[in-house]
Image 1: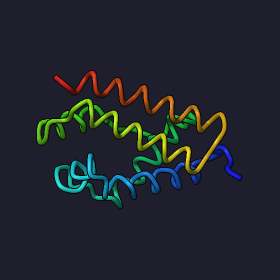
Image 2: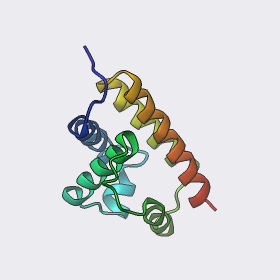
Image 3: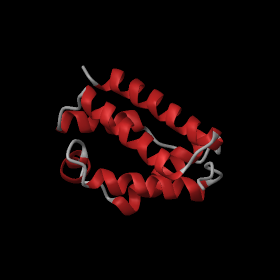
Length: 123
């Protein structure tokens, strides 16, 4: 039986599972592995803090995701399809692992963030 997302440890499970899929994804994987060349040891803890702050309002994230995505877009043009696919993968990963109020909230918040970034990044 699935549980709801309860804490940062659950967020780490979610984020790790999500990026494990992203790394080999045929639609967006190359953006992370070849264009951004993500340092996963550095990136994953930042993502734990980001989503922990989004879901539990911890205040433990201090970064500028918009700037990162604009820089990425300059290196390799981001499209609506990229953002939509990211959102679809995120929601599927959440659904595979969790269910409940916080799980629903993190899917909704991710879609809103993705749409907002898409509208700001895509020229």
